[in-house]
Amino acid sequence: MTGPELIESTGDRLCDRIAQGVIGIFENAFPDRVRGFYLRGSHASGTSINGSDLDLFIVFKDRFADVAEYERAQALCRHCARLTPMLLEILLSGERGLRRPDALGAVLGLKLATRLLHGEDIRPELPLFDADTYVRSVVHTPYFSYTYPVQRRNAGHLVYPLQHFDPDGPFLGYDQWTIPGPDGTDQPSTKLLIATVGWTASAIIALRSGQYVRDKASCVELYQKHVADEWSDVVTQVHDLCRNRWHYQLPSSNDDRQTLRALCDRALGFQNHFLILYRQYQLAELASGDPDRQQLAAQRLSHIVFPDQEVAAALNNAGHPRTG
Image (tube, rainbow, N blue to C red; front, side, top):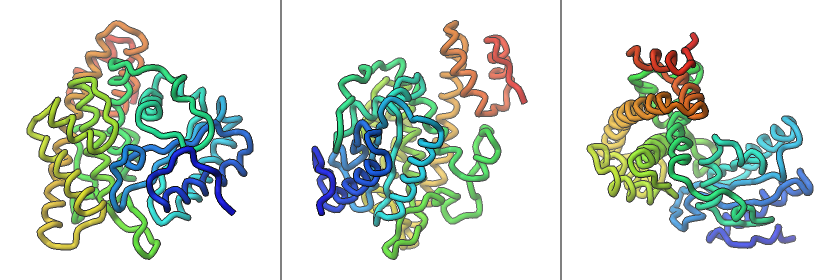
């Protein structure tokens, strides 16, 4: 028995079979509820390597019927991921959810950096790229990798300057994101380091140029072209070594492990460098006089504690005093 027919191949026979399996499972679990299945990430851009994730985007018709439907879909994503020999990441959205102002990053990713695998194509209906709105959306993206470690997530906010996730760990805590190993068990990887540096670089590229970053390779290229600062070598080396040479795995040789630890150490400096740029941007948003922009900036600044009083004063002047 063959799986659902794909409109386009992923370019990899195993990935095609996994995608067909996911599509079949979701169509059986949620009959007539899914509008389209899309391929995203390196397989969509043709830049995948050994160890690359399989990234899918599933769009439900209209919106999720209720919280229970959304939670069942999320649970199904987790169960599907446990069946695959590679890391499978699935984004979920309802069509209405793509219209929210804070969903622009997902909308642009869907419109500009995916391929339709199965179902109906809604990408022509999505809004065109707008650099100003995109910057407001993507500038907060690094926050999610910064709060990935449990100790930061439990705190409920970040405190600048950031400290290492695990100062005593061999890779300072950047090895907390696991990938499937050859025996099927989860093993530590460089995924969190790659994501942290990549999302940080993408946000800085947006702040400097308004350019949309399609994938990891274009992130390096655009950073060198539009930013080209003292952190360019960190962006380049994390991509070239962690992704292309070590294929997301932790290296085994002492020299390579020392190199990786040094990159992890510099990544923290890169994050703190970005948070200063982020602070400046959000303060400008608070002073914009636009109520919508002010509200979004106030909400985002409430997630980060800076030691000076300028942020608190700006929030108060904009009518959004910090609480807690």
